[in-house]
Length: 415
Image (cartoon, rainbow, N blue to C red; front, top):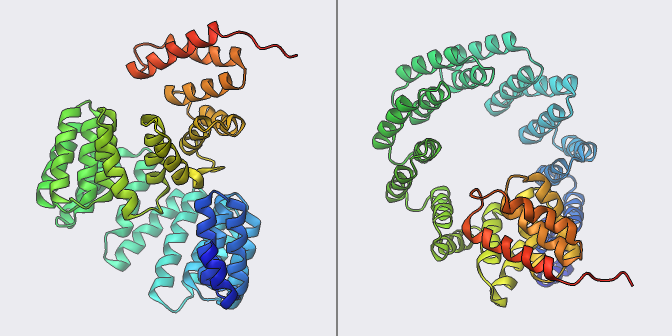
């Protein structure tokens, strides 16, 4: 931030500097300052599409739909044919359930001069028809696109739509036909396997996924589907072995490495999991999920001050983010740093959002205990202790110790 302010003195109207300052404020856990910097980036860029899209996306994620609309409208006044801005505007109107103006955006895109505009218009029209429940019109529209383009995209959408509507037999029939038509496209083979799994035909889906990964070992999604299917069927050993095989084929895959870290963590290999998370964070520190997992593991598995300081530095961006897992991570770090009020303001919504997660509930109980709300803390801890054997042994030991400490601690007087 100091370096960027120095750069800003030399170039006070450079939108890139404001954008970088916004990212820095995000890392500091200052969402209001981040929004302010993005707003100023829009202003100094004269409502340029790139800066406007970034600011509108933030506003939309915060539920500020009308200000997001204003930002996009201003960008369109400058660049009325900009396809990404029109697409964002259409998506915003779908979120607002403003079907009429979403239709206006569709017509603008369909009347565009580029293939990109036409494709985007078709995608938005399909989403509009699906959102308004016009299933027959959607099917006819997608069928016409399939005939027109000759590609599988519309057919894939048809299959997914049929599946989402519970028409599994129809989806399966379409998937079989599409795979015969495109036998060398792995994403279609994957879709066929997923439809089979949805139809309760897990063994057949498993066979297809195994054949798919053997034929297309660089197709990451095929490996992930196979790993997840084996895990969902209770075949933990097979799932772990498949993941190791996948990592031989795709050793640099962030998603597969992230999955491996999670598996190591569940198996108690904390050092192994931390090594992977550290490597992933070094490779791309912009991913909030990776930052959350690394900070959470540091805070939950390490007791030295340096590890706690590093966890806080990584997790600052998660402050006030409305996602239960992120709230738990930041809240527990705040608790361990002695900031109990800050911890409680994050751990209460985290526990509400993750009511079945015993670790999150334990964290909230500890925050209550630290704030002399002994009855609230014991109510949670007693419930957790009664849930054996669902509680992991290490957590159960912490719960039992916390109960004993709370019950023997002297009651503090209000005076």
